[in-house]
Image 1 (cartoon, helix red, strand yellow):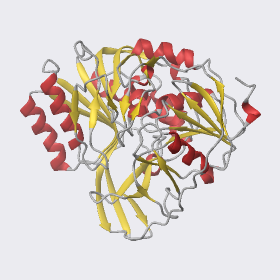
Image 2 (cartoon, one colour):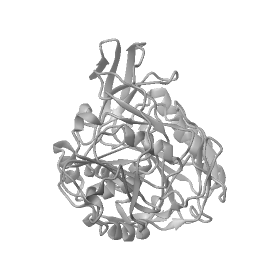
Image 3 (cartoon, helix red, strand yellow):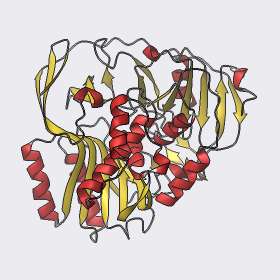
Image 4 (cartoon, one colour):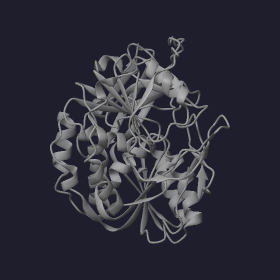
Length: 443
């Protein structure tokens, strides 16, 4: 039984019923406070690379390990790298090269990652396969030239509208659909999307939900069985840790966060060479403005095959970025997996995390000890946050964004960072800010 608390006022007790790799709870997550009336707390992942900075291999190993668990439980296949992945995650040191461990999926599978938190986890799961797998992630982007194939609502969320821009025929050959999320609380979000998928793609009768954590209680697990029977499908769950939780107390303190400074930063273009294939699509932001910059094909938002993924990552590994000491690579919103890969390619003393739209309460006794506020870089009009950076004592920060839709949001974020900043706009190239000419001749 695990116990988590903040100032002894909010207490969460966990009872673990399934832990196949014998992780300690504190190795996977810790407690923080949500600014959300539906649920006042959340478990902040220590392996996801979203709200807390981690070494880049950690979320990549986590997704790959979930793929190993999927192969073992669904097909009886033991992946030879599974034990090494577990050892690496527990020791917080890489033990194996993932590029050398990929294998073909036993049958054709379609993998879906949930926006925004699990887009990278889904991609990392998909990255375990060299063939027979396709990947796509849900998105909150309103793309003007594309129609969403399905839309669904998310439980316990501060932002509910999910869209799926699946290309025609994307699910036609799939023997099953695998949905990847970072955590299941009630599990209702997964049922929402499966109901939509089952209606649109009635030929697919097998679904697997993959998640790092599964907190469904007995009644919620029974609801999955009932749902599967009603929809005439097979529905399985694969997880690294499963259990139940009990909550006591409440937390009502007022949050004190300094106002974000705003000033004009000096932008100097260093390289105009895009990192990705740019799709000529436009989007409507939350504030009604239109962004005409294109999207990156290789993120998986528009569908990606295993073969395309392997080929692109091999090319990405050849792109160099300048590194100045201990470095934090910051992904943005749904753009997380490619920043992680860029961080991995930078070598030692590199960490990664991401901006988020999740409003988390700052408390000195929590792992979320500070927050930077700014407008979403990709979706103007949406508040975004970056958490718990300063104690990392970074000497350089590299912000990796797919496309900049809100320059003021980027400027506001940079204004709060007290170290040299490099910006990688994947669809454009590398930018420097504040006249940091030390990078000028290094690309």
